[in-house]
Image 1 (cartoon, one colour):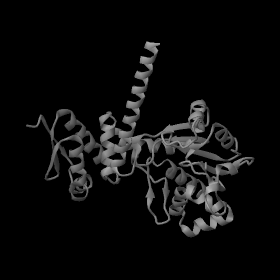
Image 2 (tube, rainbow, N blue to C red; image 1 turned 120 degrees about the horizontal axis):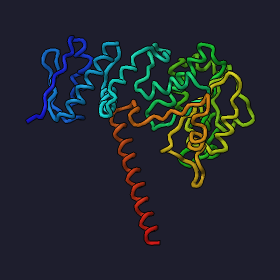
Image 3 (cartoon, one colour; image 1 turned 45 degrees about the horizontal axis):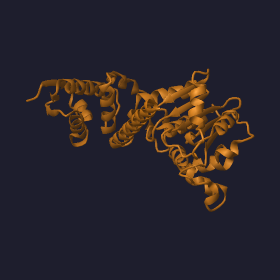
Image 4 (cartoon, rainbow, N blue to C red; image 1 turned 90 degrees about the horizontal axis):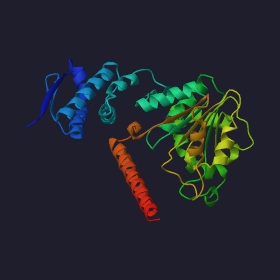
Amino acid sequence: MADCRQTVDLKTLDGLAKILGNFDENLDFLASELHLVAYVDGVKIHLEGDEKEVAIGLEVLSALLKLAENGEGVDKGRMAYCIELAKEGRAGEIASLSGGAIAVTSRGKQIKCKTVGQKKYVEAIKNNTVVFGVGPAGTGKTYLAVCMAVTAFKTKQVEKIVLTRPAVEAGEKLGFLPGDLQTKVDPYLRPLYDALQELLGLETYAKLMEKGAIEVAPLAYMRGRTLSNAFIILDEAQNTTKEQMKMFLTRLGEGSKAVVTGDTTQMDLPDGKASGLVHATKILEGVEGIAVERLSAKDVVRHPLVMRIIRAYEKDDERKNAAGKTQKQKENDQG
């Protein structure tokens, strides 16, 4: 028998339809995640189950209804995110995601922040000269940075967009790849190309590349330059050394803005090499004009399964770290 039963009145069929999703997939997902019985009666949703889980379910539905009333869409990914917030007592924060688009694609699609973490990240980019966006894959670090760069370029805040990445991935080096420099660099910078082409359209993107208003290059080619009136994005920054990171940050010229993105759990540096991203975020956090925004598994906006995968890996890392500490303690005790 269910411990608790509660009802949410969605008031209108339109509100109900937005919350339920296609073939009630959103409601089914909520019930599955919280181990509840959920069913519809008119424009009301009934929840039955453990008292704590029912309370979370009520928070989620109420928060998403407010979002839907403000014209925002509700899908399974957003439902999953709201559940995570509600478990921390933060479901009300999702209302902050209502609002205007940060960019519009060449096909007219509006790009909006989908999580509170993303919203803070975008606000940090608006209000600071240098921003570090650190977090796992799927949190939108790079894509949102490119959106902000394109918006700044279109509104003439900057004259140029510069995209760069260290050419260190999975143990490969540029020299092992066939072709000229552009051919060698392309595979590393493909995600940046894709984002730019979506936002600008292929024709405009090609023209801007030809004019030099968009520049894409490996990090090594930044040395010795001063970049003024530019929006500069350093992607995959976890693979920079301390020296490379310092070199990059000191390229910043008048009227420029830099966004540095990376995932410190996916470093491909040779053994013994410290990550420039890890080092920089430690020593520069709190410096005026610099912001460090840390995104988490909750900010993943891909398939809800990706969030679970990241969580599983995080738990595995925590388990290994705990085991390592226990072993070290035993060795100290024996010593």
